[in-house]
Amino acid sequence: MNVSGLQHLHSIMKPAQTNSLQTKPHEGQDAFKDMLNKAIKDVNKAQVESASMTERFVRGENVELHDVMIASQKASISLQTTVEVRNKVIEAYQEIMRMQV
Image (cartoon, rainbow, N blue to C red; front, side, top):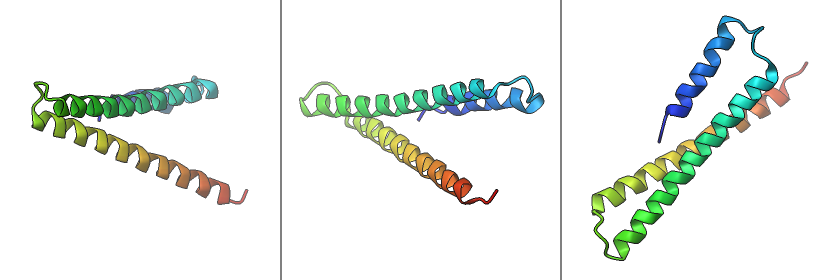
């Protein structure tokens, strides 16, 4: 899984920590939305690449088995990571909703 999205998130958060008055809420929301969209597209790309390599291997094209297995594992791990992040976000949201104001 490409971790450039996490590095991008770090670069977004760093300016907000130095001077929070400069960052507008909608800018943070847009940056977060863009980061999530990129991460989901990366997961989809890994899934499509894995399926394509598997299909080419089954057809007998010149694709090494270990390359097919590596692509499959990358796609699987990226999907599992995405699901776990989603679960944590939902859990955090539910915890916030339970807070008394």
